Length: 335
Image (cartoon, rainbow, N blue to C red):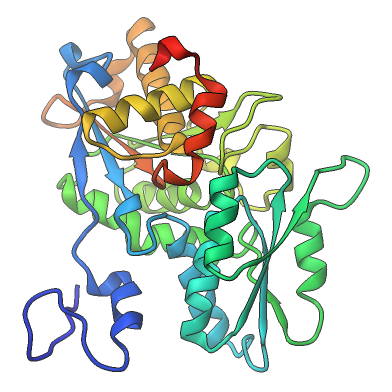
């Protein structure tokens, strides 16, 4: 980590590049990794420890800011942003928000987004605040997807589509920033890593890093149950558009539903981890994976040299943009 220097104190960003320096993860301490209490750990008595990687504590409050930054840096270095006045991306919200903010650092005045028609109203308002020009799209299996629409728009002069669903800068961001932090924070003792599958960049990048450094880290991917929805993650059918080899990157794929994701998110918030529904989703996937290993007596295969199972999962963003959805998906008794 390189800390900006100035006449003030530690973690103060100064001068004409202050915001750019602030948004660059190379200039900040590692994102916290926090162990969850026993109420969230179905296998604590068996020597399992579960840690939350609080990616919502990034400056832009969501994990998508890292791949977006990395892809823009790559595009800038290769000259692909020369003459570009507009960015466009198919997004569930966080990627578009991050692009709009980061675009100003690259002197790009306009950001357009193709969004799911059922996007949470709070997320749509956040995008309006960020200045994103949004188009809502209902997916049609017989027509082009939002990803295809954004790709086609990116072929126009002056418009750049980062293409987070196939751009290698996406998994490279996790490989460069997130996975190394978890590795160092656990002193190389991590044995299970879990992430929700949306673009799949986080899981693919983490898999590359951990397998390069420690072959026995189990990589767990959460996918959305068919005909259900959780912001930022996809069902098996919708993952067919993804270009990354997420199947090869994952050791286990776990289906998770809408209600349990929101309920677990709410429970995390009440415990002091202010994480959104995709974070609850990923925790459920990890818990289910660990419970399966406990049932079939294979937990021992996940232990490190200290005899512990050290598991980490990604908390992607906060619940604030989805607040209206909690009452929609949960019963009064859940509160």
